[in-house]
Image: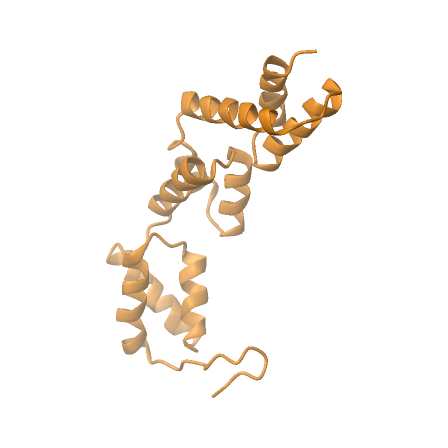
Length: 164
């Protein structure tokens, strides 16, 4: 069957066929429950089948939200240089609990966090050609705040990096 809106063939699987497929999907990289649930619904499974498969995945340790939160937070910080606020927002969007989110944030060392922020600000300061110090500081700070860093910390560092 072809969906007339996105030309993708709809897959119809039984729970027995979906389980090994979704196990492989989870083994490839850490996944949130929401991602797995959405993938299972793409296989046109009934809600009770989806919940049964998810409980099997949790039991067999294919799914673990705390482990996912740690991998996600650490990865987004190290690779994309995201700040804690952006990471928290994304983990909330993925439906993780407050406890899992806090556990994930513990993966980010505060000295590394500050070093990364400082290096991002210095790099951005080198790119910004504005001569007015107030506008220059504002552009640099907006950049870091947009990446999810806390505004108080950003402004503290910006004042050090961009003198009057």
